[in-house]
Picture 1: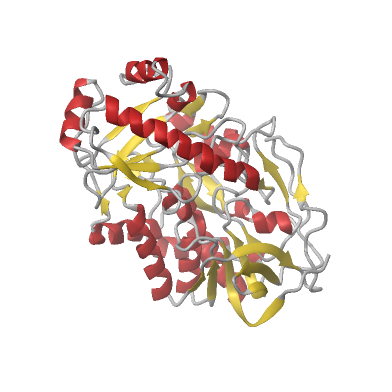
Picture 2: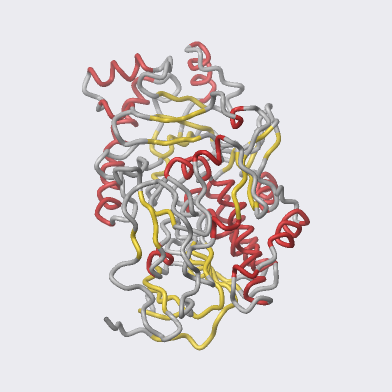
Amino acid sequence: MTLPYRTLDRDWDVLVAGGGTAGAVAGIAAARTGARVLVVEAQGSLGGSGTNAWVTPLMRNVSGGRNLNLGLTTEIKARLRARGDGAADASGNDNWFNPEGLKFVLEDLLLEASGEVLYHTAVVAPLGGDGGWVMGDGGGREELHSAPRPPLPASPPHPITALVVHNKGGLQALQARIFIDATGDADVAAGAGVPFHAGDADGVHQAMSLRFTLAGVDTARLRAFLNAQGQWQESAAFLHFWMVWGRGSTLEPLFRAAVAAGQLLERDGDYVQAFSVPGRPGELSFNCPRIRADLNDGTDPWHLSAAQVDGRQAITRLLAFCRASLPGCEAAYLGVVAPMVGVRETRRIVGDYTLTLADILDCARFPDSICRNHYPVDIHSPRGAKLIHEREGRAPYFAPDAYHEIPYRALLPVGVPNLLVPGRAASSTFEAQSAIRVQQNCHTMGEAAGIAAAWAALRHGGNVRAVDVDALQAEMRARGGNV
């Protein structure tokens, strides 16, 4: 198949496909390392899940009470606080942020480092050294299972030389020496024939969500109500309440009554969370509704389209419920509906190392570690209200000062010498991915990938496996990182 595309008469050292949670940070880190960087983003702003899917606040990732994700993550938080778009509560949790403010912070950081961004541009396919499509019949899909497999040889005849993208200028080929696949769905890696896993043992993905905000809330009244219900709230500025069927939420009777009255569907209570948003007084961000169970594949455009429709219908029901049942919400109104569906998991590449559940529970250490994690196994199953959220047990991982490491090798897809895949598509099993996929880990993986990509382009002839990982770790520590 041949499509008419034109090759631009310029190139870059590092091309980042996807300016989301991992990709924006990767672009900033690579540009700060001296590389000529282009970040290609399908939306009109950087930040991905944290901005366009409105996933706020950041989930805590601490060990012994200390943040594990530092470096650029710390700088981003500081910038958000300086704008009034970030905050820390009395417990020291500094993960509260305004997604709209994050769009500005990430863009400013990239431009200040002399990086470039190309918005409203979708990745079509990678090109190989012969100028043809790298992919064959649709990529290197593996059978659907989550067991790790030994790495395959990494000696392809042709590295990726360009990405074909599509925007208002038509089809264009963008050339670079190193590519970072931060699409979240491993689109570039899959297009290049890299094998991957997807979903659980049955091929079922974690549930998707469409987040929204409720504005015009009398937070003082709502706080008083929640405290009376046994969901203690520190202050009206830092509200967080939740309801999941069968998990002991004191709000469950209200949801049961709404289902009985026909105001809510049973599945509307599968998972509900709401959080305050810094810089937006009287507004709450809802980590829901969950999307219909049969719509769980974030790489299927029909699923994604139907998810937007299903989510908006559920938001209409939840809005009516909040007005009728939660004191302080009687005059509330719809503030924001995320323009992007929240996708927790799709493709996971087969890399030089595949992180496993055993690695997490046993607090595995790696000589090429580039990230530390203590976020729990957190599987949002679309099968009914099922939520697997492991926070306690006998394994070493459940100690308060425990953590496991993520190796650099998990970012290296087998078979391609000049590609890195940080973020939720990194090489891991289904269970392990549910623990490492949160935004702050994606930041840290992105920062490591950005530095490594710049070095590979400028020092190592375009080979990401030639990067000195000891030097990479030292550089991350010099930038305030924790590896």
